[in-house]
Length: 182
Image 1 (cartoon, rainbow, N blue to C red):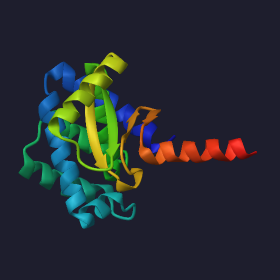
Image 2: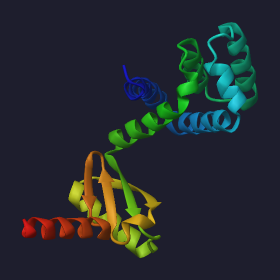
Image 3: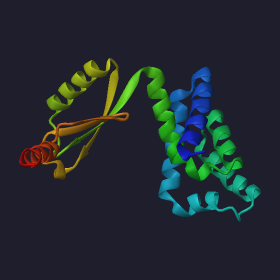
Image 4: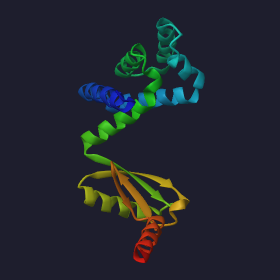
């Protein structure tokens, strides 16, 4: 089973519990905080990932962290479950899966936008409106700069890619010219 599939299963279960208890915002904040802690402390992440360190020792380390962080019981129990199932070191994909699950339930679609340079606020807003109209859903935009596309933009929504980059247009023009020569 792939890490993404596992992360999605854990995320759905956690979101179900958090929604039932009305703790979605605090659980997401707790998970994000703990994931940041693991990313910022490589040694800590390695301790949780190391199969030679006894589980009881890992539980002690986790409990000491939880005592200091005062997380929601739902979050603390989730982190304990991940530790017991040897998945705590894979928290980042699970946090991403939680965000995707919440977006899906809220009718929000994520779109990655790649541009050659930063867009002005008005351009971002117009793009968000156009993509919302095209998808029929609310859109959460994530922007990335890639000067190699030369101009225009590339939008990725799920597995669909809209490539309006100058690089792509030049590639298509080149191919048409080659085809015309044949």
